Figure 1 (cartoon, rainbow, N blue to C red):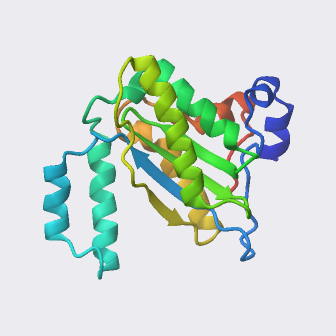
Figure 2 (cartoon, rainbow, N blue to C red; figure 1 turned 120 degrees about the vertical axis):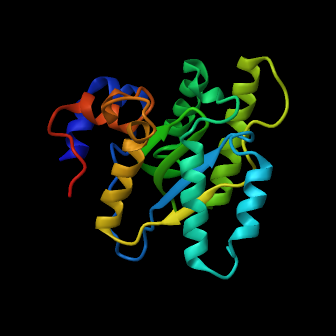
Figure 3 (tube, one colour; figure 1 turned 30 degrees about the horizontal axis):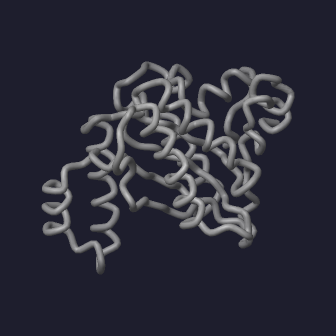
Length: 212
Protein backbone atom coordinates (compact mmCIF):
# COMPACT_ATOMS: atom_id res chain seq x y z
CA UNK A 1 0.00 0.00 0.00
CA UNK A 2 1.06 3.60 -0.62
CA UNK A 3 0.79 4.40 3.10
CA UNK A 4 3.12 1.57 4.09
CA UNK A 5 5.72 2.27 1.41
CA UNK A 6 5.89 5.97 2.17
CA UNK A 7 6.04 5.44 5.93
CA UNK A 8 9.08 3.19 5.49
CA UNK A 9 10.94 5.81 3.45
CA UNK A 10 13.15 7.73 5.96
CA UNK A 11 13.52 10.93 3.92
CA UNK A 12 9.78 11.31 3.52
CA UNK A 13 9.09 10.49 7.15
CA UNK A 14 11.60 13.08 8.35
CA UNK A 15 10.23 15.71 5.97
CA UNK A 16 6.81 15.37 7.55
CA UNK A 17 4.30 13.92 5.10
CA UNK A 18 2.41 12.51 8.08
CA UNK A 19 -0.60 11.13 6.22
CA UNK A 20 1.54 9.45 3.52
CA UNK A 21 -0.95 10.08 0.77
CA UNK A 22 -4.09 10.00 2.89
CA UNK A 23 -7.03 8.21 1.24
CA UNK A 24 -10.54 9.10 2.49
CA UNK A 25 -13.33 6.57 2.99
CA UNK A 26 -16.12 8.55 1.28
CA UNK A 27 -18.59 7.49 3.95
CA UNK A 28 -20.24 10.89 4.38
CA UNK A 29 -18.00 12.04 7.22
CA UNK A 30 -14.91 12.83 5.18
CA UNK A 31 -15.08 15.20 2.22
CA UNK A 32 -11.77 15.88 0.48
CA UNK A 33 -11.38 19.31 -1.07
CA UNK A 34 -9.43 20.29 -4.18
CA UNK A 35 -7.95 23.69 -3.34
CA UNK A 36 -6.40 26.28 -5.66
CA UNK A 37 -4.95 29.59 -4.58
CA UNK A 38 -2.69 31.99 -6.39
CA UNK A 39 -0.33 34.91 -6.10
CA UNK A 40 -2.01 38.29 -6.07
CA UNK A 41 -0.63 39.38 -9.47
CA UNK A 42 -1.15 36.07 -11.31
CA UNK A 43 -4.18 37.27 -13.30
CA UNK A 44 -4.71 40.93 -14.30
CA UNK A 45 -7.86 42.49 -12.85
CA UNK A 46 -8.96 43.59 -16.32
CA UNK A 47 -8.96 39.98 -17.51
CA UNK A 48 -10.98 38.79 -14.52
CA UNK A 49 -13.49 41.60 -14.87
CA UNK A 50 -14.01 40.75 -18.53
CA UNK A 51 -14.68 37.13 -17.66
CA UNK A 52 -17.17 38.11 -14.98
CA UNK A 53 -19.03 40.28 -17.50
CA UNK A 54 -19.16 37.41 -19.97
CA UNK A 55 -20.23 34.73 -17.48
CA UNK A 56 -23.08 34.46 -14.99
CA UNK A 57 -21.17 32.73 -12.22
CA UNK A 58 -23.83 33.39 -9.57
CA UNK A 59 -26.63 31.55 -11.35
CA UNK A 60 -24.97 29.16 -13.78
CA UNK A 61 -22.98 26.13 -12.66
CA UNK A 62 -21.71 25.74 -16.23
CA UNK A 63 -20.40 29.30 -16.21
CA UNK A 64 -18.68 28.71 -12.86
CA UNK A 65 -16.90 25.70 -14.33
CA UNK A 66 -15.98 27.73 -17.42
CA UNK A 67 -14.54 30.48 -15.24
CA UNK A 68 -12.43 28.04 -13.27
CA UNK A 69 -11.14 26.43 -16.46
CA UNK A 70 -10.18 29.84 -17.83
CA UNK A 71 -8.39 30.68 -14.59
CA UNK A 72 -6.50 27.39 -14.60
CA UNK A 73 -5.34 27.89 -18.19
CA UNK A 74 -4.27 31.47 -17.51
CA UNK A 75 -2.34 30.49 -14.38
CA UNK A 76 -0.39 27.91 -16.33
CA UNK A 77 1.06 30.73 -18.45
CA UNK A 78 3.01 31.87 -15.39
CA UNK A 79 1.86 35.50 -15.52
CA UNK A 80 3.10 37.97 -12.91
CA UNK A 81 6.19 37.97 -10.72
CA UNK A 82 5.76 34.19 -10.21
CA UNK A 83 7.72 34.21 -6.95
CA UNK A 84 7.07 30.52 -6.41
CA UNK A 85 9.47 29.71 -9.25
CA UNK A 86 12.28 30.57 -6.82
CA UNK A 87 13.43 27.47 -5.01
CA UNK A 88 13.69 29.08 -1.58
CA UNK A 89 10.16 30.48 -1.75
CA UNK A 90 8.65 27.24 -3.04
CA UNK A 91 10.47 25.30 -0.33
CA UNK A 92 9.04 27.51 2.40
CA UNK A 93 5.52 27.05 1.05
CA UNK A 94 5.89 23.28 0.66
CA UNK A 95 7.35 22.92 4.16
CA UNK A 96 4.39 24.72 5.72
CA UNK A 97 1.92 22.74 3.62
CA UNK A 98 3.51 19.52 4.88
CA UNK A 99 3.74 20.79 8.43
CA UNK A 100 -0.05 21.18 8.63
CA UNK A 101 -0.56 17.64 7.35
CA UNK A 102 -1.56 15.48 10.29
CA UNK A 103 -2.41 18.59 12.33
CA UNK A 104 -5.16 20.40 10.42
CA UNK A 105 -5.83 18.07 7.51
CA UNK A 106 -4.87 14.88 5.73
CA UNK A 107 -2.86 15.79 2.65
CA UNK A 108 -3.26 13.58 -0.42
CA UNK A 109 -1.58 15.48 -3.26
CA UNK A 110 -0.10 18.87 -4.07
CA UNK A 111 1.88 20.86 -6.60
CA UNK A 112 3.55 24.25 -6.26
CA UNK A 113 3.56 26.05 -9.60
CA UNK A 114 5.36 29.36 -10.35
CA UNK A 115 2.32 31.52 -9.51
CA UNK A 116 -0.23 29.20 -7.89
CA UNK A 117 -0.77 26.08 -5.80
CA UNK A 118 -3.08 23.09 -6.13
CA UNK A 119 -3.57 20.61 -3.33
CA UNK A 120 -6.00 17.92 -2.24
CA UNK A 121 -6.72 17.59 1.46
CA UNK A 122 -9.37 16.49 3.93
CA UNK A 123 -9.70 18.87 6.84
CA UNK A 124 -10.02 17.54 10.36
CA UNK A 125 -13.37 17.89 12.09
CA UNK A 126 -12.23 20.61 14.50
CA UNK A 127 -10.89 22.78 11.66
CA UNK A 128 -12.55 25.03 9.08
CA UNK A 129 -11.32 25.35 5.53
CA UNK A 130 -11.35 29.14 5.70
CA UNK A 131 -9.39 29.06 8.95
CA UNK A 132 -6.77 26.75 7.50
CA UNK A 133 -6.36 28.93 4.42
CA UNK A 134 -6.13 32.16 6.39
CA UNK A 135 -3.50 30.76 8.73
CA UNK A 136 -1.48 29.18 5.94
CA UNK A 137 -1.49 32.30 3.76
CA UNK A 138 -0.56 34.57 6.63
CA UNK A 139 2.34 32.37 7.69
CA UNK A 140 3.77 31.76 4.22
CA UNK A 141 3.35 35.33 2.97
CA UNK A 142 5.30 36.66 5.96
CA UNK A 143 8.16 34.23 5.35
CA UNK A 144 8.19 34.73 1.58
CA UNK A 145 8.16 38.53 1.82
CA UNK A 146 11.07 38.39 4.24
CA UNK A 147 13.09 36.26 1.81
CA UNK A 148 12.17 38.58 -1.05
CA UNK A 149 12.95 41.73 0.99
CA UNK A 150 9.52 43.16 0.18
CA UNK A 151 6.28 44.13 1.88
CA UNK A 152 2.67 43.99 0.86
CA UNK A 153 0.24 41.51 -0.57
CA UNK A 154 1.58 38.12 -1.60
CA UNK A 155 -1.46 35.87 -2.11
CA UNK A 156 -4.87 36.71 -3.49
CA UNK A 157 -7.33 36.81 -0.56
CA UNK A 158 -9.70 34.33 -2.21
CA UNK A 159 -9.22 30.67 -3.04
CA UNK A 160 -11.10 28.08 -5.07
CA UNK A 161 -12.34 24.84 -3.61
CA UNK A 162 -14.18 21.88 -5.08
CA UNK A 163 -15.34 18.91 -3.06
CA UNK A 164 -14.50 15.39 -4.22
CA UNK A 165 -17.56 13.36 -5.15
CA UNK A 166 -16.25 9.80 -5.08
CA UNK A 167 -13.13 7.64 -5.36
CA UNK A 168 -12.92 7.98 -9.16
CA UNK A 169 -13.06 11.76 -8.87
CA UNK A 170 -10.39 11.55 -6.18
CA UNK A 171 -7.99 9.62 -8.42
CA UNK A 172 -8.58 11.93 -11.37
CA UNK A 173 -7.95 14.98 -9.19
CA UNK A 174 -4.65 13.59 -7.89
CA UNK A 175 -3.55 12.98 -11.47
CA UNK A 176 -4.67 16.46 -12.53
CA UNK A 177 -2.72 18.09 -9.71
CA UNK A 178 0.47 16.14 -10.22
CA UNK A 179 0.35 16.46 -14.00
CA UNK A 180 -0.05 20.26 -13.92
CA UNK A 181 3.67 21.02 -14.56
CA UNK A 182 3.62 18.68 -17.55
CA UNK A 183 0.49 20.33 -18.95
CA UNK A 184 2.14 23.73 -18.48
CA UNK A 185 5.23 22.42 -20.34
CA UNK A 186 7.52 22.95 -17.40
CA UNK A 187 8.78 19.36 -17.39
CA UNK A 188 8.41 16.13 -19.30
CA UNK A 189 7.21 13.89 -16.47
CA UNK A 190 5.23 14.74 -13.35
CA UNK A 191 7.90 13.13 -11.15
CA UNK A 192 10.51 15.59 -12.46
CA UNK A 193 8.83 18.59 -10.85
CA UNK A 194 10.65 19.43 -7.62
CA UNK A 195 7.71 20.66 -5.56
CA UNK A 196 5.01 18.06 -6.05
CA UNK A 197 3.64 14.94 -4.38
CA UNK A 198 4.46 13.05 -7.61
CA UNK A 199 8.16 13.35 -6.78
CA UNK A 200 7.53 11.99 -3.30
CA UNK A 201 5.61 9.01 -4.65
CA UNK A 202 8.45 8.15 -7.00
CA UNK A 203 10.98 8.44 -4.16
CA UNK A 204 8.92 5.93 -2.17
CA UNK A 205 9.38 3.27 -4.80
CA UNK A 206 8.05 2.22 -8.15
CA UNK A 207 5.00 0.56 -6.62
CA UNK A 208 3.84 3.70 -4.81
CA UNK A 209 1.05 4.73 -7.12
CA UNK A 210 -2.31 6.31 -6.47
CA UNK A 211 -4.77 3.42 -6.47
CA UNK A 212 -7.31 3.33 -9.28
